[in-house]
Length: 209
View 1 (cartoon, rainbow, N blue to C red):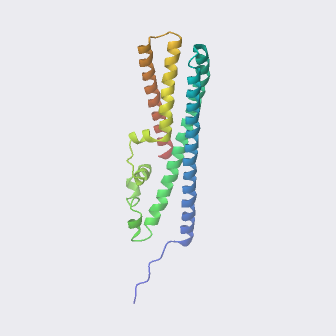
View 2 (spheres, rainbow, N blue to C red):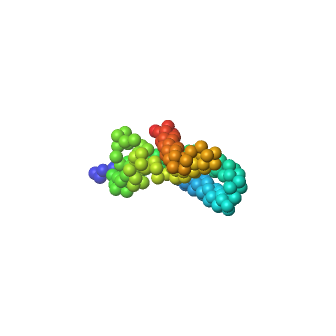
């Protein structure tokens, strides 16, 4: 007598998970497209603002007026962009984590499954799912990795603009000498960057884990 063939995966469940996999992948692509679009809008606004300030730099009064109008607008746009980029990053990571769960199921359906799905074959109960999802993309989960996101890029640029704006205000009001004003502005920019990264890390921890 020949051994009966092992039953294959439930066709209904396979169809459902395949569809869900496609939906999650499409939704994740949407978050990436939105992040790119928002970052492009912000960078375009920064470039336009710097060009406008450059044209007005020859006239002291006009430059102050332009700076007072442009700098706060860029800072507000930067903060709104940063927060939304953090949200899309969390959303994308949640989608990736759910995709990895489906891939775990794919790998378990055949003895040769681990050959084709090598990254999700470790026992999921022994791993942080979000960290495993990051590792599946060839990256190492760490605090430094948080600095390489689009949100951190916008946060860093916005922090720099905040420091420059602070220095301009201090010099326009003649509150501090240039070295002290520059030093205080650098400290403020670094503190703002640390605040951006801390906020991003908290949101990822709250939204993904």
